[in-house]
Amino acid sequence: MNVEIRNVYCVGRNYKLHAEELGNEVPTEPMIFLKPSHAVVPLDGATLELPQGKGDIHFETELVVAVGRNYEPGMTADVCLNAFAFGIDFTLRDVQSTLKKKGHPWTAAKGFKSSAPVTPFLPLESLDVLEQQDFSLFKNGQEVQRGHVKDMIFSIQHIVEYIATQYGLGKGDIIFTGTPAGVGPTTSGDHFELYWGSERQGSFTIG
Image 1 (cartoon, rainbow, N blue to C red):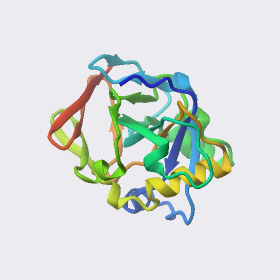
Image 2 (cartoon, rainbow, N blue to C red):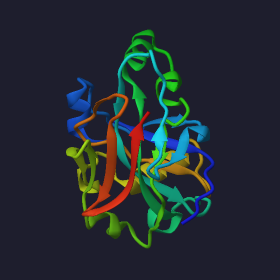
Image 3 (cartoon, rainbow, N blue to C red):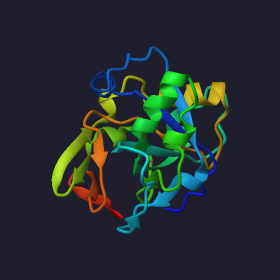
Image 4 (spheres, rainbow, N blue to C red):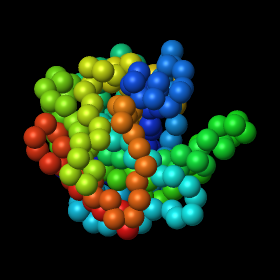
């Protein structure tokens, strides 16, 4: 399913165990940041070239939803969203730690080229579909992350309403909905596979 991407919204710390594993406070309202659209690349078995010489790069696998029509007040997520996929929010962790200490934005740590690879989008008829299976990430054949929408701190409906109210939400926008526990470093040669239930949705290798 083709999605013409405009804005790339991301939700930070939307899984309690992930917030805790990094020593962060669990948020009381959605924590939103953005990535440039240039960060999005297809997750189609290709080799990804990531920044070198900037410290640890961490993988964070996420459910990604796509907005199919411009949001209007009172609109449900079922009506607003029309597709879903799975992606990686790559993060320059050492750079992020420095930025956080200085109180600076995270763009340098989160928005670099190829920092948001995404699997092909699948049609989304109802949010109920997303509750049917877990999503997972395998690194070099070993499972490293597993998540389920029921474990989110803020539901997809809440996220849609919050982003629409605070920033606006329109056709072509996509939302990275947060990562479960298990994030970790990656290095050249690592091979990753993303699964929805037992079906592989995409794979890539770090160059």
